[in-house]
Image (tube, rainbow over all chains, first blue to last red; front, side):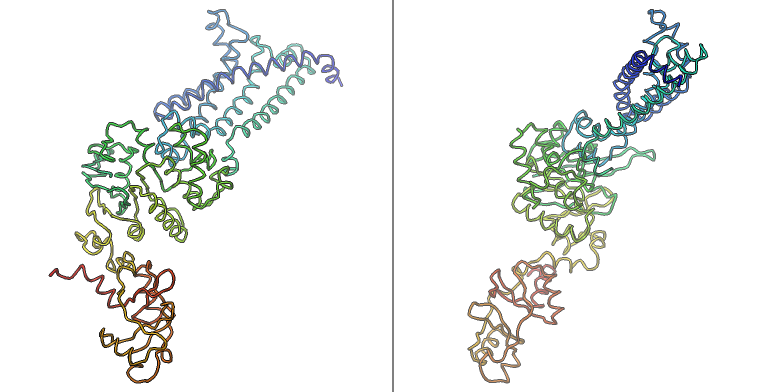
Length: 219
Length: 374
């Protein structure tokens, strides 16, 4: 009962925090797609570089988020952004690299060599091959990487409240510090629901972006 | 014409350099199908792929219609050469229309012309454009996909076509159909075609010329009949097998082998007339009986004519097997065996007698090339 009352009394805050949370993740993952996809495509040119890049991205993901925020405070303080929005976005950006780079790399690498040869044979330039054949075929797998990144980082972003980035994590941190289970539960459940909703939403987008010819053949 | 001069490819491998193609030199005249034939790893595919530079040659030169392609931009070169591969390689994310239109689009044709060309090509391989333009490759059967693969290569009407075992992945029945279809198309299009195959029968059927490869070298390059009749060395001999003389039978048409100036009798001719004609020609066996439309209906045996009296129409045996002018000798020989005869009447499209064919005639024809020249 308490919880429902709490929600009713704080609807506007809850909505604001949710929007804040979505905005943070969206900006960060958006930047991660803009960087990770080109990196994933670029490293298909060299097995050695690919191994190194994927190794580094895997290392980054093992750093606990609290520690990552801690490390960024002194670094970003030099430009006056030690806490708040910027380090939160950077953390999520870094965490998103592995699923996005790895999926892009795998998807482009897995394009049937016969199709690649056909594309060369009809006289497509390397850029035309990417644009007309390889990227359209890779979209489903790349989008799966984006989904993983989003779901994972909705959770990570909840911790960013400790460096003052806002979002739904605020309810959780206050719930802990004020020993207020209502806030704690509302925050936790909201984060979970948001992650599930985002996953479904992106699955829909993934299906929309998948070329029609692949949907029928591959299911 | 495609002129290949000293074309060589050396691959660097961890075990040292491997020469995949060793100074290949050959000319393919305009409008001919040249089959590159040989066991796997013989260099035939490498040679083919050096022509559109899917594989970059180590040395040597390829000229197409007297233009050296060495200095040409690879994308321009490839857009001017049709390319068909065994795996077909239709782009699954594109519709059939988009697949066919790939090269015209890359060449910057306008939308209307591109679309018309796609329709025209689908019609050519008997796929209904209104049903197929909007479909995706995954919805087509293997044979249909390969037809689309072939017309995609023809879209921008390139003078030269490279085909890498194009029908290899298709089941034998459909393969024969699509081969016939392709030959029919080629008789109108007159493309200059290089065609890799490892199937001897396909090579004999499709090729105007056959190039035999072994271990990176071109062993013999000849017309199929010359190759079968006069293999240059033991390798070519064993490659075509002990029955190579029989394989030549599918290269010869009835019209080239039959005797066309043959005497005939009609129903109301007297048997004595039949005997007279047979004596004149030295026939030991029989003479053909035709109806008023000059269609063969039977034969009058010599033994009958010698022993009976009366009209031919009263003493003949019906014919139940006929050879057509464009049948090959293999089919005709098979007909002879299955009807236990050494003789067949040959008819034109209207069923009129055009000549006769005997086993002796076939033997003479196939044997001619082995007889010492006088």
